[in-house]
Image: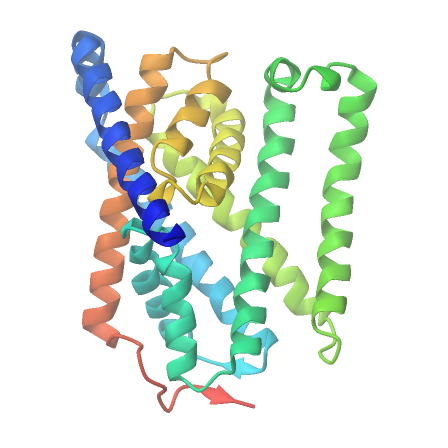
Length: 304
């Protein structure tokens, strides 16, 4: 019964988002037309390419999460698993991308405990990195925005302490989490560093991808990247919004209001959402066609 109610709420949310967006675009048609005419095809292609780069790095994170539970797979296998399951975000229910990974891991005879460890491990890294990187970049780019959102952050000494301590606490926290979560599996410093660099690559790629959709705004790259990272977190944890649709765009509009008009952010966020969905469909379908749907275990999978 609860699941049925939740599914209804999600469908209502989707219809509501589409309705509100349609009305907004109707009321601001002239401004939107101007923005659309100003967008360069070259920049849109660049946005798609940077988004693809981020997704490739994201797939490597899937491989490292499985490696942490002593399951070795090839990169192409990790890419296919990630790309195919990502499409589940847009199905009613909103968690099918996670359920899809559980299903694939079960088909490969990975225990429920280890599957859970891998998925939790991967999501902890993704969510925490997006939160920390987004908050730090937004604070670096405009302290006034952070002050407006969180008034107790207005004092410069608090902001400076946050810039120094938050990243340090993040790294230490991840290390401690890994030590406790995998008691019988030591933390390998090289792998830990690679995962840290992967997180930076992922959010930098996604941020640049969104930045490229805007008109040439070279001075706002840091702010746009920070806002996108934080908005992705909000959309990801909003279980009622499949794929974070509506939530991500709304928060982007709020966080970037000091730099751009609301209509400008809204149209660019929508365009980037379309690029995002198109890329996920093409990557999911492409990897499935080229490498096959990863529903069963293969010779490339080695469970230790």
